[in-house]
Length: 230
Image 1: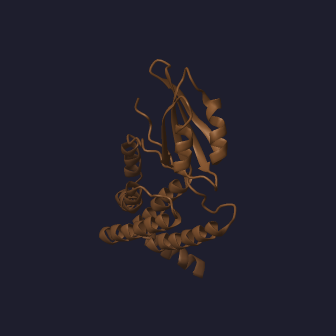
Image 2 (image 1 turned 90 degrees about the horizontal axis):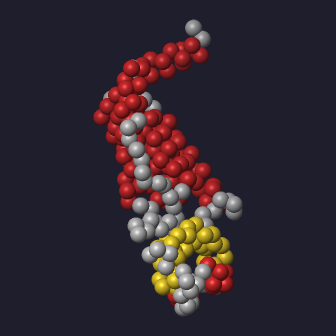
Image 3 (image 1 turned 180 degrees about the horizontal axis):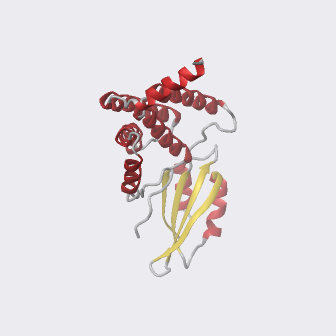
């Protein structure tokens, strides 16, 4: 028997032996904590939602549980797929960067669930190295988070063109993301995603927009604004 055949037989026997459930779940949680710490470190100044951090820590445990339950049973695999298909996710992630860490958590959970936690740990180390490299590259270095500006205007008195000079003076990048009317067309609500100019500030932008005639209210939030229920 060649060394390659022995290695294949050893790997097959190792894969056939189910991991100790408690050890696998504990190791999955440890890997999840590592993924959470790496995500928070990579976020820099951006605020990370506590729910997302908790999800990144728990996802490996849940994934490992699923892998342990499935084992080598194809029938159980199809049953779990059918059961999990009824779940609907309605909370969008703020960026593809967050989505990548969700997949990382799932991956390390799968590794722990099949009895290969060292592969999950290696993935965390490589991901940390990749994050550090991406952080220093000029094309991928994290930029300041955008601001969301919402202005309510008296539709009969002022329009978007009246606000454009003020926005150009206080921002270096901007894009109109929403325009809608309220109160049977009497109020026009405009929403932009903006990056402030180096010489401006959030307070200065709000003051400048509020001083314009016909502007009833200005709201500025960090990142994505919550949907207006009205």
